[in-house]
Image (tube, rainbow, N blue to C red; front, side, top):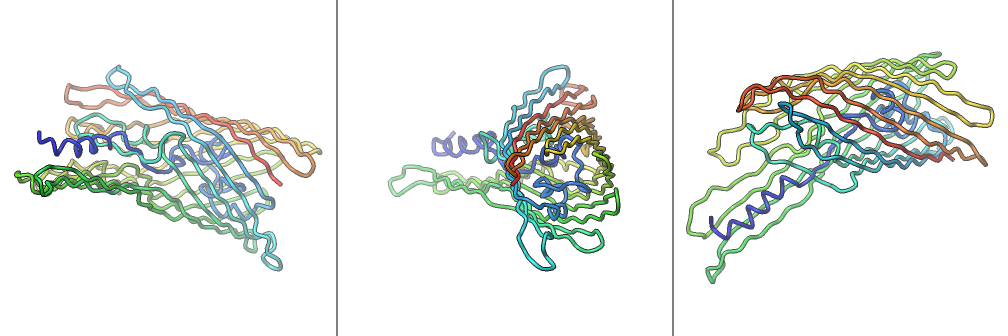
Length: 405
């Protein structure tokens, strides 16, 4: 191998450990309450978590709030009875809620929210893996991604609320040039940068008595990476190599939900439709003459969700709330084959959480803990070495502290 190409190769190999942004909300939901209640919230979310669940719910904010939290995710995946390596993820969470102090007809009708989910040790992650190499394409890397969301909600007459916002993530683009200088020495130049991508979020809610109904649309959020490698004046004729693909992908989706709230109880039932059929696959052809990787052939999915909460509130402002939830996430991936070894499983997800709060001097302090356990239903794949069963589990846990004033 030419010595001049070695730095370029080292850079390309480093991309296998580079990290990219995407929204882990697609796996768990966002905020202590929706996560604890099975990813629901389109009908009832009324704090900073509404930036993802349904921005229309931000219009219920009457006080400013700040939330700081921490979450971690551990995997126990297996293939053919052997452990499948997956990195443990950890991240900080920040949430802000801010009512806009308009007067007149807009009084107590408009509020904004911000939500951040920031891994503790990564920014961008993209993996370059052959299509024939078994890989869990949906789960492990997506918990180690930065998520940023901003939303605004507006209350309308007759119990209607509307809202909108944006989700942001980053991709990676770059170039590697290997060339000989005037003295005949070869050198390489590497230039890469993060590129921002965005997706819209729109929501609407309607409430009447004890009932609330909500619907949320989230656009597809895609983190692409593209690094071109070009060799010049080295005495050999090499094509331009394009190391490209999709580091992270959240499909476009619509969530519809109904909730009932009375005497401290909240019960929510909904469904999320995800357009996985638009997923382009994790990688692209390396050169113009390279055969393209086999298409992923993902299919659209429907995810049913259920969430329940009971809250006890005392006259002094103290409260305790117990939460639980469940959702079933069918896999969008067809069974893996030797030529297209993309592994994924149907998931049964069980959620739980606890909230404790107290009020002092007009300020409310709240501590939340939340968890989700994902059980992967065993599935058989046809690998290069024969049939093998894959499955496992993951655990997502976290805690947060909030101040409302």
